[in-house]
Amino acid sequence: MIQFKNSFIALVLAFPVHVLASTTPLSVYSTNNPISWSPCGNGTYPRECGLFEVPLDYKNPKAGMATLAVARLNATKEPRLGTLFTNPGGPVTNRTLGVSGVEWILSDDILLLNAGSGGQYDIVSWDPRGTGQTIPRVKCFDSGIEEKQFWNGSLRGQLLEVRTDFDNKTALNDFYSHINETDRALIRFGRQCNDASRDMLKYIGTASTVRDMVALHDALEGKKQINYWGVSYGTILGSYFVNMFPNRVGRVILDGVVDPWVWATENALNTAPLALSSTDAAFDGFAKLCAEAGPSKCAIAQYGSTVDSIRSWVFNLIEMAFNYTSAHGLSEFSSGQLRASVFAVLYEPINWSSSAQSLADFHAALSNATSTSKLAQRDFHWPAKRDNGNTSDPATDYSYQAITCADAVDMPTTTTRDGFEAVVSLTKNVTRMFGPHSWFQGGLYCHHWPSRAVERFRGPFNHKLANKIIVIGNLADPITPYVSAKRVADALGNSAALIKQNGYGHTSLFMHSDCTVNATVKYFLDGVAPSEFLECETDQNVF
Image (cartoon, rainbow, N blue to C red; front, side, top):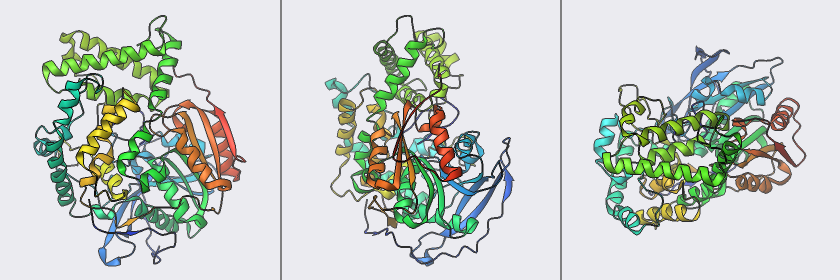
């Protein structure tokens, strides 16, 4: 669920029997499948792109082949030490929740990973099944027009409009009044996505994606140990990998950790409460540093501002957006859009100064209705939509929902009402500001999703590994709390070292720490991990 560059990107944020994954290799897949690399992108350092074929179903060769879109940044220093695989999170195709693997390699942000690994590895990523240019690809609609017509005003097809929270009985009753129509819409939506994706949804999922990475590695490097740096959802891929193939583990970092037990073994509705458990702490970090910087450096601060006063200012802005929407209808300036965008701001502390200015501009425009036409022309980076290549009105990317549900446990007793109650409970008990934004959590779709992956992995997640890995957690990460990193490291025992970075933002990459970078470089270049636990301070002024 990592995001890149634009600080004001909005996070937007069933059941045949299937065989579960085991830790034993399936029938060996031939690696006599070379990638024909071609130059791609326009970065300072040249990149290469190519395609790679793998089985759709590793247990059923007759199912056919998948085609992975792959990209590589070659080592920038000598001597070259091998290949480092990476996954940027999401899982997505666009900036709604992050970038695809190929986009990650082509972006300037990959240079953060290059610096953190020492520059002596070829860094390779790929678009996981369901995303980007890889086939199979999740496709629910051909265009935004078709998507809009499908939802036809359904609450499920839009961000929630909530003045502050659900304590107001009228707001709560209005929300619950949509349960039945949402239930019908979700059933139709699952069928729509499965039909539009040509019955390929069962072939996506993390267990198969792990096997794809192993096949890619074996084609590039042979059957050696595998090096990997996963961030956000990429840590799910990493947790699956190190426990499905413990003897193939080389140098591996899991950064911004998603809890694999909740993801793989619990009801999918349980993911959001844990994921958002430190979101308010992340917001408080933003507010604290803004208040300390003062109005000369943080556009939403005043002299004497505090964390509480800035929180109140943002809640007031949300209410202004709600009132504007009530008067003018859904638009770019809704409270749902604003919550999503404030949430996205928390991801990248390096961009907090410019994000605060955007919030101030938004406030000024809503304060003066005549300014909204001017505001509409500003680049606020509201929730992105995927470019399907054949339309200027692209449809929303639903790969996040599809992959979440592909991996999920069966949910035969879960109802749409349960999903509604989960959103209300999260708003009341976890985060009042961002609870309504959990309306787009992937787990809300899974009880009516038409399929699960042909292969699902359920653990265990405590194998003894061939080499020690590093697990990194931020003090206050808005979507992957530190407790998840600690749980993964503790379960792996002597096979993992834990780094606690005392900073904000999503993953260690977007609030610099010399301590963390020195540890990761030493690990990748020399194979030396911290002995057990390392606590690192950050070195970056964000305002």
